Length: 310
Image 1 (cartoon, rainbow, N blue to C red):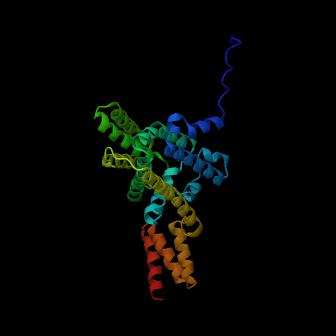
Image 2: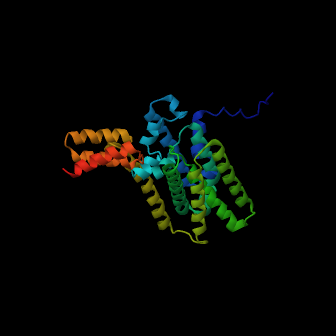
Image 3: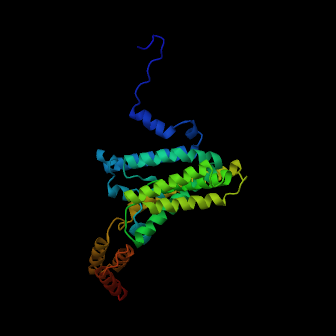
């Protein structure tokens, strides 16, 4: 039995306290402001996606249309239709609670150390650039092979791990504990990716980019307070600007979420009404999606030829 002078037992952690712990974390995370902001932004975007889906089940599996609205990476749109903002926007999107939970716990495990080691002005661009490279690798694989909807911070996280491996190599050598632990972590991620069919293109692309970026860092160099503020401010502007472009395209591009068939139907209807400007745009946008089957090419080609003669 507890003694009368014993302190009262700790109350059971609530969901709210667990979320606060995830976002605020330990002292290590509180000493890494960029990492903390990235974690918070991922949580906020996930909650916004769930609110957009208007379904309690969204946290178990986010609807595809919601993911696309918020900027998920689909090769036919990203590469074919020029939706390049998805390369960065998709790094802050997650498909379900397990997806975001695993990624944020991984981020918390490695990012604070890297941010404290190199400073926010190097860490923030590292996270964004490796995320974009990972997304680009995923989009190119989807464009040339099997297309898949891709999202998540894992490409950027692998970039941070790759950078940590290079830092370990520089300070401890090839067999140092940091180098080997980061290399082992990356190997496990890639192996799980092949087993569970995760997006290994993003993982490998991000990791390679992180290693290359870290290798380019000059030892002993540090940003002035003004330089650090400019770099971090620029990164914040880039993230916010990307979100703005995603929202603007969602609101102003009538073809964005239409497939080739729907775009061709619009083109044929516009041609019949004599609106060649609309017909040309819709037919061209149909061809951009990468579906170059004979029927699509014939219909789009006929529309474009007829519009040229008018």
